[in-house]
Image (cartoon, rainbow, N blue to C red):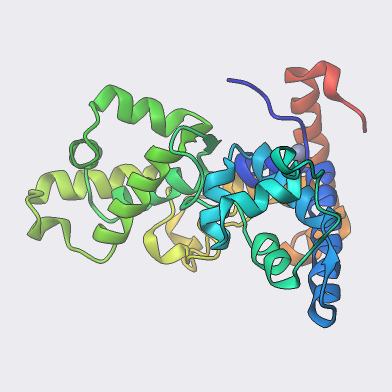
Length: 288
Ligand SMILES: [Zn+2]
């Protein structure tokens, strides 16, 4: 699968939360907010930020027609912003109406408006499916409902990426099932408890550990509220993962220790260990 360069599209689509991606998006959001504010008190506003934003959205695989629809503006008007109207002998517009700028700048690439075949990060998809298994939905049952074979289903659950079409289908299924009792929907008691214990054994977070704001955010950790159900080894694995997440976000070892209520030396040792592991698998990428 093709690797996107670190930056806006990689942050939005691949869920990359590395320093480069985070910086690119934060800086970009600042500039964009500035452009939006400036537009509110002038009859015309600079077209450049609008052009840049359209390019960003296009880098996420969104076509002009989709962008126009999401912004609620006519596609020809966007064409005027990007290339002008060659048939009328005009180049790209220098100024646009603030309303047009505001409408376009407000468009974000989301699961709803990305193209169905766009490849994106699978984090939210995995969490939804795992949470359903934890609720007692057998994987086979979920696969059938998604129109997938068991083989494709388990491959999807192992892969880091999914296509938007699949992510949307899983989100729809999750919204439909998360509150339902599997035993009242054709799942027998044995399959129900097998699914639940499978999820528990693998430490799959239940529905209650997520909300709409966190479930698609790769940096979010599940709010399980019941760590005593996990064994010592499982707890240690969860901790390592949390530390890895925070470290990747650029949080200092001291702060990680404070946030997780751990000894600094322990955090330090785990971070060193994780980084050694990284070096072993990706020797060329090591900058730190
Ligand atoms: Zn990145």
